[in-house]
Amino acid sequence: MSNAAMIIVPTDIREKVREIEAAYTRYLAEFRIPDDHKIVVNFSAGKDSTTTATVAHHLFGGRVTNVMADNDNEHELTVEFARSIHEQIGCAPVQIVKRVYTDAEFERRRQSLRDRWPQRQAIRMGAYRGVVMPSLARADTKFGQAWQRTAERWGIEFDTPLSAALSVLRPSGNSFLDAALLHGKFPMMRDRFCTDELKIQIAFDAAIKPLLDDGEVVVQWSGVRADESDKRAGYARFASDERDPDYLYNFLPIHQWSAADVFALHKYFGIKPNPLYTQGASRVGCMNCVLSTKEEISETAARWPEHIEKHHAWEKKVRLASRWVHWMSVGTVSQAWMKKFDLPLGRAVQLYGLEPDVQRIEWSGFYGPRGTMGAPSAMDVVEWAKTGRGGKVYDLVKASLDTAVCSSRYGLCE
Ligand code: SF4
Image (tube, rainbow, N blue to C red):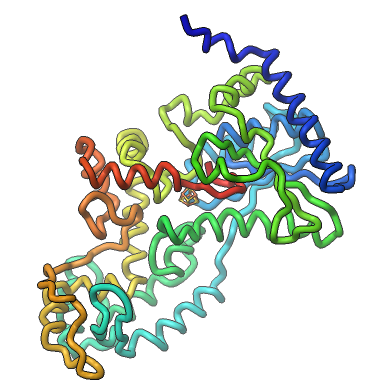
């Protein structure tokens, strides 16, 4: 008979916390870190960062600051949890920081579009290499007239794509949407500007840099656990941080803990975890993450459909800021032009002998390509997520997501 249920008992948690204390003391000596250093816990409102904040407070009390970067794509219960967790732990309130994009940043982007979109632009990579995109600032060209049908379909009234783009390039009051508008797309696997700009950079700028500027030595504690992904397993438990290697360090106190250990600690200290766990979420934090799995997307669509609708409303704005989506939205017309276009240097269109399918792209989608869909909307993805396991393509996507979702070493998003 398995005695797995007997493994997690309060005495084990005491032992595990003692192990963290002993290991931390060794690291401080090894890295010659002064005793009066500052401790900053990266808090995401998930179970791992709640555990980390609890252990840090238990061992070091008032010397600990908890910081959470709210990227405006969190579930409201997550933000509420972050605002009230100090009452359960007995620590100071979590410092909640946010990246705010200014009108000056949007004005720079608007000016860049005013300079570039009226010009024709050659595509330099991919299957369309060599094709020249037309001006997106003229209504009197074939493209401009064809785009009017796009505008009709999208229910917008603008003369040109440039006018449509300029209309949305203003601060919206939501940081996640603002980042997507400025980038002209949503974050994706290989370009996670949501984590970089809205989590890591702002937490550093708002909570850590001021301490470093004051000459303090800072150790960041993060609730990263090895069994979440191969990438996370590869992180050292203690290391200096390349952003300021002599003064800033990273410590992963629960690196070897299991999820069961983490919930056992909640029980041991009498802390109720983020309520989203008891409502069926396997991860909390962004609702949803752009890299969410098929299961998570159908879970959200069933339980919190308002978040899917919010993302779809964002998609209607972000596509207006994308040159590629405007151009590809005319579909058939683009393809016909490609075949007879007078390319620079007399080259043929680089389609490598393939007859291209006629494509029409309508979205810069929140979830990126899914299944066999190259540019689906959030609504298309929800329909796809309702279907059974989609065979090979699905398995490959899922396999890559399992190891890639939010694998930042700072554990700022769960
Ligand atoms: S959870 Fe996903 S969407 Fe949210 S910041 Fe992390 S990578 Fe981006």
